[in-house]
Image 1 (spheres, rainbow, N blue to C red):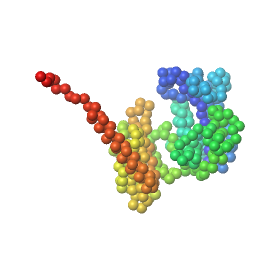
Image 2 (cartoon, one colour):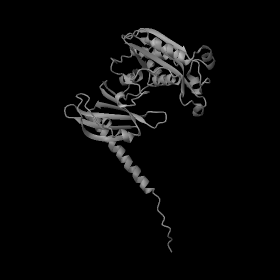
Image 3 (tube, one colour):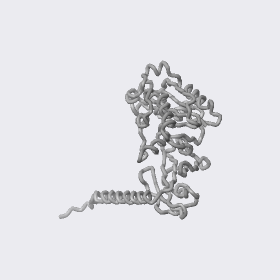
Image 4 (cartoon, rainbow, N blue to C red):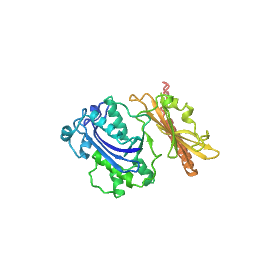
Length: 336
């Protein structure tokens, strides 16, 4: 199994939303990648500049960080479809046992597929696993698991900075170096699922236990209300024995798109279920659900209960304020 550590640079409309193409808001202008074998030895590099079709002029924020200008991109760039076809072919080279993508953050893979769809290219396999090295690094080095920029991670690890950042091939190289030198441990089961493509029917649902988490992805639903009627969404099974737990904290919203709940297994303790709802179409008229169940200790359980109580109190306070602001109904009679 080879690791394809890749990075993209992309541009967007310099005129903001007004000049944005609805099918491709972010246009890839550079692909860079490093191939690692199963022992994390570097075995090859790939780099292509891409001639833009939709946004030939750089957005001001993009222009400020890149190491090349529009002129160089126009002169040295090739069409996206050509560059991407060569990239996929390169990924497959020397990959008899297959390959898996790695990136610093989850966005690159979604933007790659979006650009591929724009040009009606063959889709990547489904379901699609990849390694989010940014998150794996955060779990190792950040107390609250918050992510950081690539340059900060490279500096913290005291890696040699012999290439400029914000060039796709160089950012891919530094991500690969972090995999080699970051002491991230065994990452085999720390993969995540890309959700650019999502389950549209029951047979496409994802069920997987990895990295201590039981993950399920379901779709499509017309609304969150409909999804929460599905027992597959609300049931909580023990991550160790698979048995259905008994409810200890009923499902409650922590924000518009996330609900959590807690169940208890008599043998293995409490299990926390987190369900995130994501838009399943450009028109945002349907959604799918990403559900993750993990074992929790007493302190985490206490935090969940406290959070539910705090949210309930805030709701009561909002309701009370709204009630006091309710306008007085006029009857039309006048006191004499």
